[in-house]
Image 1 (tube, helix red, strand yellow):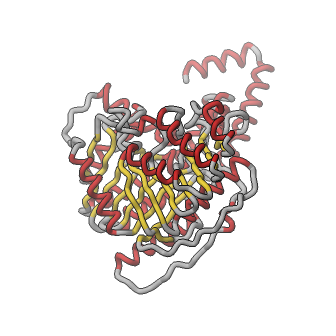
Image 2 (cartoon, one colour):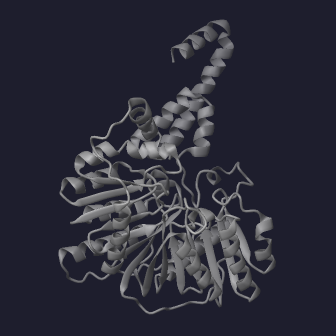
Image 3 (cartoon, helix red, strand yellow):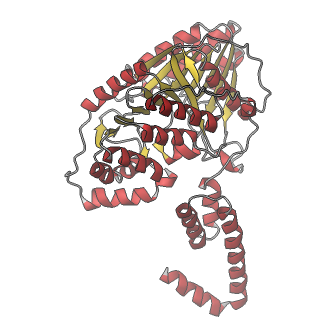
Length: 475
């Protein structure tokens, strides 16, 4: 900073007119961009950080903010037509009241009504997921809709593509939507057999026009498959060999869902919104399916930069606050905001069984350091932390008490809560909670527990963790 001030002082004396023009331009730049940032009404700390960076890095700061700064997307949505079914306010005990409050919160923030499922299966790892997916595709009679963040042109991707090609040749409508960044290795040559068979392919935020600001940093991280409006798949598993433990010994440890029942209609709605947004097409004609109500209370949670309420983030925090016995969280990326951190530590300080399951080393060393920067406060509050490895733990799930479970595509971090388009499922069901508890308990038993008295080098641990934490809003 001293060198910069010395340079400015010398420049002012050497070229006073040129310096005056530079200073005037810098002032206009700061005022204009400052108003732009301030009027977005973000958190004060984040706003100040951006203002300082723009002042210290004139013009270059603008480029960084333009590409990576906080953004909102306004898009034409079918969401305006979503049902707003009123939830019953029947009498019940305190626990029932809290569950109803979660349902109302989910409905208010997503405009998707609480619903039910007749069958929910937890699919552990890629092998079981891909077998169930291909089986469901093979049984399609009307349509197959797929949306993925990562769809790789490898053995797994070829297997799924060929299953889609077979159905398209049989006259089934196939629509595939993939994220342009997550599926960057997917080429039109690989997709040609599907297109030639009559299938449709679209890209979410393609990079063909990089001057359009939102396209680089705002991605669709969703994983949705809907078959005939009757069967749906969602969760954390992409289409890639990296998720199939039968093909790779280091495949991700992950969790997915196979769902039947009326809640499938909400996942269909989410897919159609994304398809229309990505393609500019009108809403396709889809036969209406009216499955009977099921025994499992289920609700689709969606979030993204096209809405102000951060529904998935808000529901996670609300569920933790409502818990009375336990809070178990599994996430590959753990970079909590202030509200989420407060909820976790408050639950632990209140005596609840709070556990956190994270990878011993994620696919981003920066994220690993950032996550570990929060460990000291969590451990001091009484949170039990387990680091899973050597396989990368990719499960994204929250379990509260004996009957609340959230499973989906969203990590527990800023990017998933604020930047990515995500989808998760909220279940209020003792059976699903018990199955999830069994899975998490199994994985925690194989994941060493982090100790408060662990040795931590200043240069290799404490310093990089602290520096990585400064980058938390960008991770």
